Length: 173
Image (cartoon, rainbow, N blue to C red; front, side, top):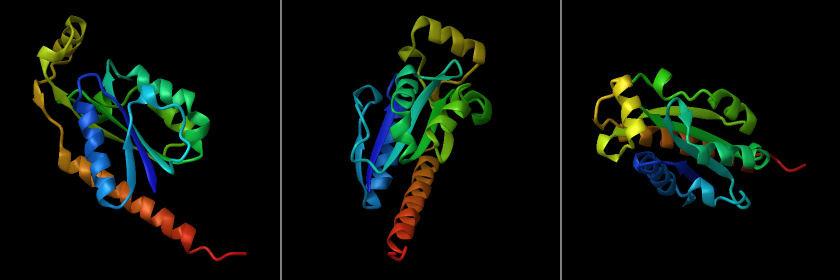
């Protein structure tokens, strides 16, 4: 299958999660393109999409939200998974669940969402971001769990294989 992995990432940590997902899918035999959301004009040629975003102040980054809104009709025609990466030390259910996610997932008919802890380097942040992080008492460091990322990507690969098998095993009329 031809798969698009597209990730909005402000400081690169979330993009690295996307690359880990892409690597697992490639190892499973898929052709995978990694393209930044702003560069995706349409989804022609793709069978599946993995769309991810960093989470800041409980929202996905605009580039990911814009892609989902702009290409919603095409996303609904493909199998699509989404993931979020946010405040490194906060519980995933609260810190990495952006407010708009439920509506976005319904709009694009995403089959699933996964939240991952992120990486926090205060030196990378703008003043306003540092103030927000200080208020959230998030701990600096790399809290990403790449074993969990690869396991989730493996589940995607399994589901794609099952979907491909169900298409090829259906008898012709």
